Length: 461
Image (cartoon, rainbow, N blue to C red; front, side, top):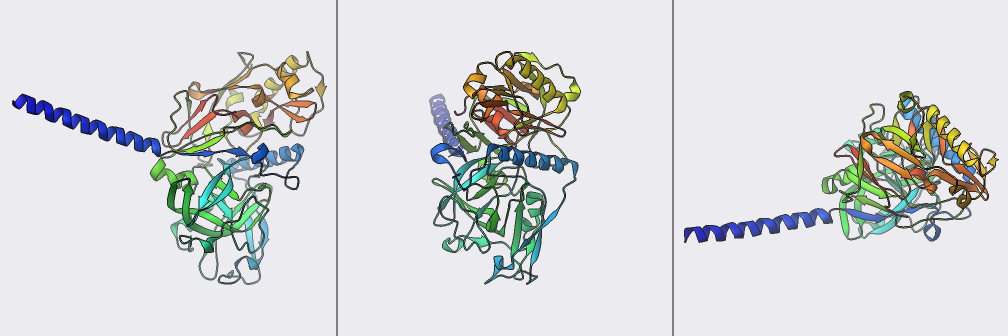
């Protein structure tokens, strides 16, 4: 009898534990935010129109400015220019300490809006939704806000109205978050006469956003998270397309990832759909916050870099062309490597790029005629994408630990203008950068908590 009772209790407890485990697993599965991701030129989802679109040559020039800035963050040679901000930005209930004008120091920063990807977030109570650019190279999030006291660039949809939200708050200069702005934006915070904290987020092409450091409820579908820290922009200008603002997914403590980490963990993943400057675009892009479940991931360690702890560093170990490694010594792989969602064209060290370019030209020139260079791209041929793609060799990027990117033709070449197609890599005198052209259609996960980055093919189209 005792044995039967013991067996009954064991089965009951086991069933209870099993149910609890199942419930906990289900809760973990629910603790992942999954958002659609589009390119700013994404066909029917485009945030660019004829008045905000830019030629590809200009996009490449701005891409080069972004690369210069990323390199400057490592060598500590950030120069500073000064941007005068009108006092009208805080008229009414606020005023600048200096009633005449205030000069906000602008460090060179990162151009956005030309070759970037966006998603939609909700802010406030009641919730309003806004299209925002996703950027792994920055750590501060902001949106354009009413009353937009100086200038707001044109955007799709209405600007965020803080006066219409029951949960909106401005932060004072004495808060810990205000003191943390320098690390997140690379600019020191400022204060108004009434002690409101002012942020200035600046970017490499002199695009910028200046406004109030704020917090409010952040929403994704049915999920609502209180107290999200962001910038409420009152003076915003630059190459942001028609987005409402930007979400920073860098590693700094003020980034969107860090703020959501208590509930979702320090993990995010995305897939960038294909996009070309001639109008073709893919589908199925996404941004997920939380632990990814793709068993096909191959991981490489996430490396630390003392000069810039907010960027994502990995180690490029080898490049294979037509199944064979490039004939480059170890010095060709000695430069720091960053993976960045906002850089369009991947940059390689001079020895690596020279070897890749020469072998590529030797192979493709047997079928097609060499064309003049196009901006920073200097391995070009006369022919459409479809034509050149039949002649190109396979390219594979190998990272420390065995993770790899087996590049498809759309990751290797770009039709820069009708009838001219170029190799989508460029040389760099500084860091190696894995740009978004090479990332397209891969499911990429950033497991910051475990210090690793994973790649899996076929995440989107």
